[in-house]
Image (tube, rainbow, N blue to C red; front, side, top):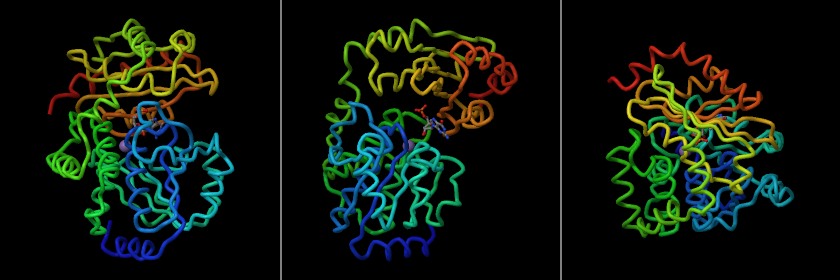
Length: 344
Ligand code: 5GP
Ligand code: MN
């Protein structure tokens, strides 16, 4: 953000205002962590702030301080709309374009004449929404950006244990527990300061990673059974049909991280998971890569999606078999890129 933009934000936040904070649809740890950290700060400053999420989030995030105050646009439509309609300022967190909040919510949000502020680390932010955009694709997480945002506002002294916990969680989940290349020494310095401010690191890891249900682990077993390798393209992929999800009483978040097992195979640089969603009539995909092969570009080119260079998502309206067949038919085009993807 430029000095002028920071000044504008400071000016906007000077007097108590009605503020809404919106994370992306199917919010993950970073979307919820960054939203709740910012929410806590704004409440401390005397604003009437509400986090309005497009839809629900997984059970393993339902302990982050303040999560019980989040309103859901799909399930609590009246309350959510009320918070949006009265908002003088709307923060858009952890997404780059309004379609990421889903059709219904997008239609409502587009009509508002509130002042929008976007804070996000995805590529190609939609600059038509607002001139107040803090975008940096090199930063590992929106939660780390919230920390920097507070630095810009000279407000890190207001980080309490709840905010520290929320930001720690977002940074941890978006960096794969501090292992992705986006994790920098700055990230670690921020993490150290968040621990000093009261984030209980061992407890947070436990809350996120050691609260599996028996069914979730059995579904992971099924996923690993379904793992396939295309050696020539250094690619591995997993499929999960709706029937398989149903057999293990699938709950939101149960498939989070499963794609990383495909990427953990030696010599594999490109991993995909295809998950059937009968209700939405789509196949939801997650893509991961190692090195220079951009799954953001791949998802944009072929599967109506996007994300980051090494982690992206997309969707297909074909059935599961047809989607996988299509994926396998495109793969040879990228074989050369994939062969050299992890060479620096
Ligand atoms: P995941 O595979 O964990 O759902 O998402 C990986 C990354 O890609 C996240 O940063 C997520 O926000 C982004 N992403 C996932 N699905 C989509 C999509 O359909 N469109 C776009 N533009 N980004 C996506
Ligand atoms: Mn993120």
